[in-house]
Length: 67
Image (tube, rainbow, N blue to C red):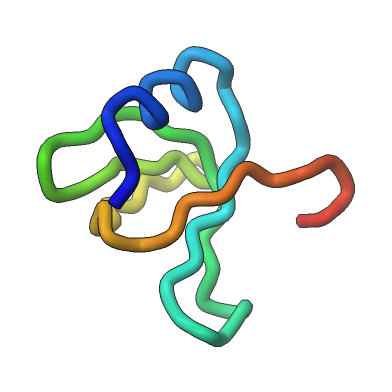
């Protein structure tokens, strides 16, 4: 599970994240951390829609040109 410190750093830096939900890359979510609590993370997608995701998913910073 991702820590509060990691989420805070990603939020402050505005880091674009890739959230891996399962083995299918089509189900990955890309966005920026907006808020979180002990069980979930709120991500703002590039189209400005918000998605609430479980903290147990894998959160990876996106490297330039890999989206």
